[in-house]
Length: 304
Image (cartoon, rainbow, N blue to C red; front, side, top):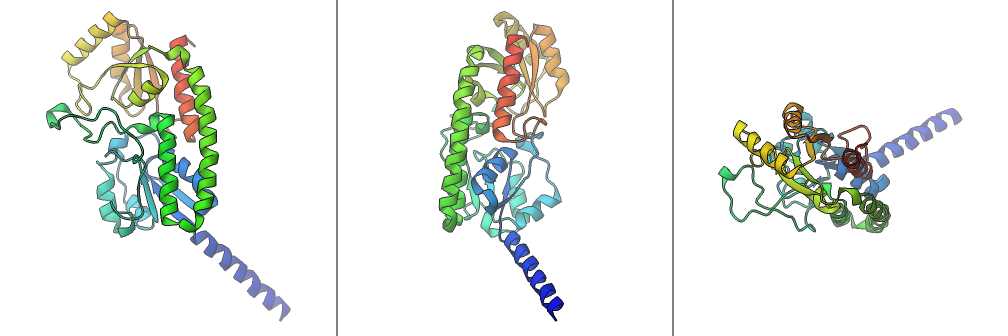
């Protein structure tokens, strides 16, 4: 009898543990940067998955059937916003059949809400390329704007789970303190980058450049989303030689050959950079992601 009671007690404890795990807030984020922020702010209360792994183009994350299942079971979805995910997220949300996380639903958390974007177009014209009507969406490349994104994450969690608001606020404050300390260090370290001109494949480094004093000179794409022509490349190389542009940034999801061709023709150096956390083994969280990009740029400029 005693043995039976012990067995029943053990079963109840296991069931209680399983129930506790099941009660975690299930959050799906579009990028690993937001997954890291959500884990930092949500702590043990959240279970977080990211659709992107860090190596993809955020405008074209491949849609997998498993994503719809993941979103169907989610309590919240965290996205960059500014239409960064327009090519894949709306269709996934529709397929997921989860009213909580549809746009304007309580679980749909747009983390750009506190950000004032740059490059907001004055007119919308498909001939001008893959325009973003709300402005350049690559806000995760600026760690100061990442603070605003983190606040939006905390607000979204608190709106949906007000009983845990104190925990979310405490964890947010801790994360922002770590980020502030890193930003102070990065801004000092970035001094050698000030005034450095660069060409990138796509205009997704503009926030990073503005934060650390670099000057975007042009893109290998004719315009965002429009593939280069031989004439465009010739003109770009000519201007780069005239201005002695030293850096060509190749975002990891773009072809390496053309970036190397432009660099060889102009005497520039190719720098490979991820555009979100997780893109390299060294970039497992948000702070290490910005660390990696800044230090990689510094080595390239300083000849390291």
